[in-house]
Image (cartoon, rainbow, N blue to C red; front, side, top):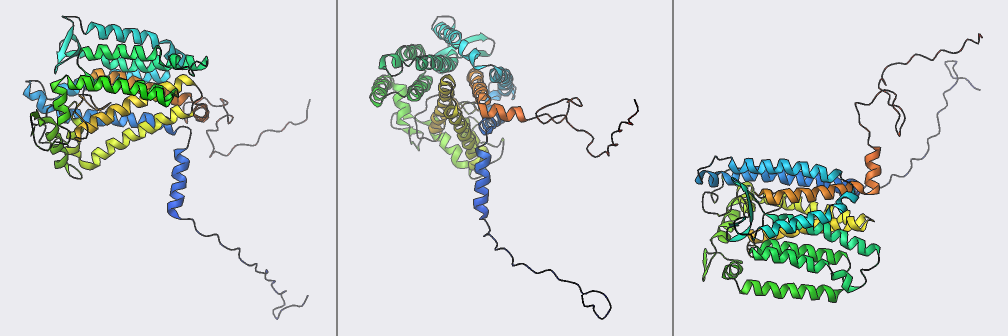
Length: 451
């Protein structure tokens, strides 16, 4: 090997290889979409959407109930936080019911379907007994519990219809009886009409519309033929037209759709018009929490049926769109739970609960926006009213239980191990947990070979 002038062997330089062609850089929007799609498709997505979305709606509802009800409470010579405290108490009880329902097995939910239905029918019948039933805003659908506490049994009729109808349709599907139209309609439709009749005796057409939506949701999930579906829908439509035509109050509410002046012909559209005024004055980000003007006696039922209008006035378009997004996420999660399960009861119950919550939200928000007649139904999980909050939170607990019962979700929850609190050396799917990972371990003593 020839040496250099310094006497050292020459340095051999490595042969430079041609650089590999670079792959084109991925579009950032495409990468973001891919990551969002992967996160959206995870097994626990529905579980987190139901739990997080419902809790956010409840918390925001408590804030808006406190803001919207202060003036009403002071006008009634009550403390400003009177309605908020009652709503907070109902939310606390509802939280216990939600937790219990989310931990109950599916078999126990099915076992409770008939007792809940019998209890709801009995309480709805008690409303019509003189001296027991109470009339609120022209509707006799309440039972006094003493003091300022009342209960509306028709709200629990929604939960009863969902559980009983889901159990009924699941048992008939297991016996392959749903292909016959008689088994699809009987006894689901007669029992639903019984509940509707008890509700309409008190004059509450808004709640009757929600129960009708649940009935149609169950029939649609059961795969009812188009002709059968259209026949039931036609009968319900004819009955609805008759009930509206025979009631001047309902005709006046129908005339207030799209009204821009408080007096529209013979109808007094004060509530509908001032709801539009509240939304219009909110702007993009609202006038500020607690700064609503319409709640100072101009807007009736500001903390119940028209709380969405106060939300738009105080939190603006951003606040109302946030509420809509939360309900949309809750509805998507419910549909996902119903679509991915193999258990027919879970599919019918999850679909019934989703239909109930979304239909009621659409009817309430549509009335506030002036697109639908005022039906007198609260915004689920948001408006003031313990009778509506308790069964709705129980239904949310059902959805959480169904989301946890999914096989992929169960496997994902089983893989999650607590970070702290485990005993040292306790084995799991990944073996014993090592606590002192930064400490240098002494080498194990080798046997000396002495016997």
